[in-house]
Length: 351
Ligand code: HEM
Image (cartoon, rainbow, N blue to C red; front, side, top):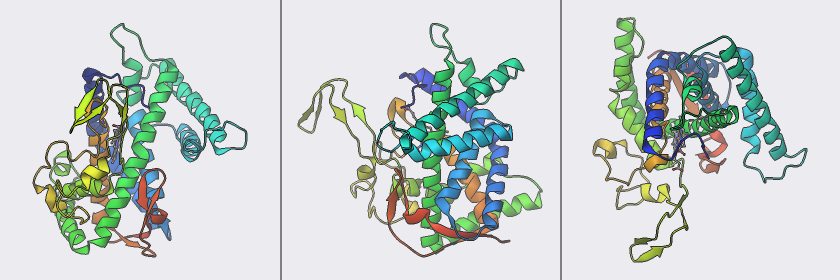
C-alpha cells in the first residue's frame, strides 16, 4: 500500500530517523497547530470530535511533509484529499458520477499539485529537510531517484496513514477520559504542573516535558489497546510455517488480529476495563502491537504519540469538553470511532 518503503531494515530505519529528526524540529510548530485548532473549536456549538481531530491531524501531516506551505497549495491539497477520503473505500466502479470516480479524479489533481510544489522547489533551488525534501534526495543502491509519481504516491500514502488513525486515537482518548472523570482529574494534575511551571517561567512546552508525562502517556497506550484502531493486517507466508500443530502453507495469506490479542485476558486482565495503570509494567513481547510489528511497522508511531501528547497538554490545560447526547456504540469508517464521531462542545477555561 505504501510503495516508498523498501522491504529492508535500512530504508525503514532511515525513514524513521528522518521522521524523528523532523518531529523534534516541528515540535514548536505543532504547538501552534494544536492551539489554533483548539481556539477555533472553542467558538463552535456542537462538533463531531473526530471530524475536528481529522482537521488537526491533516494540518500536522502537511507540516511534516512540506514544512510551511502556501495557503493556496494547502487548500488545494485539503479539498482534493477530502474527495479521495470520501471515495476510496467505495465499490471500485470507475463511472462518472460515482464517488470512486470522483476520488480517482481528485487523486490526479493531488498529483498535479505535488508536482507543482516540486517544480517550484527545484526552480527556486529551495532545499528543505522536511519529508518531501527527503523523498527528493533519496537514492537506491543503483543511484536511482524516485519518480514524481512515486513521490506523489508516498505523500498521499502518508497523509492517509497519518490522518484517520491519529484522529481516531485522539477521539477515543477524549471519550475514555470523559467517561473516567477521576482519571481525567489525575491527568489534569499532571498537565497543570507543567502548564504552571511554563507560565511562571514564560516558556513553551519542551521536548523534555513531553518525555515526562507518565500518566498521559499510559492513557494513550491504554486507549490504543482498547480501541485497537488498526485491528488487523495482512501478511503472506513466505515459507511453510507450522503453528500449534497447524500447517500454514507458503503463499497463504495470514491475517493477524491485533484486537483479539489486545483483548485477550491471558495478556491483559479484565481487558474490557479502561485501566492505564496496567502499563506500569511492560506488556509481554508481541502482545501489544498498536503500530504493527516487523519491517512494515508504523514509521509514524513516535510522531503520532508526540502530536497526541502536545494536543492533550493544550486541551487539558486550557479547555474543557462535554460529550453531548451520551450515545454509545462504534462506527467504522473504516477505522473504529465512537458513534457520530463523538459529538461534543469545547470551551476555553483557566485552570
Ligand atoms: C495513532 C496513530 C497511528 C496508528 C494507530 C498507526 C498504526 C499503524 C499500523 C498498525 C501500521 C502497520 C500496518 C501493517 O502492518 O500492515 C501502520 C503503518 C504505517 N503507518 Fe501508521 N499509525 C498511526 C499514525 C501514523 C502516522 C502519524 C504516520 C505518518 C506520519 C503513519 C504512517 C504509516 C505508514 C507510512 C505505514 C506503512 C508502513 C509500511 O507499510 O511499511 N502512521 N500504522
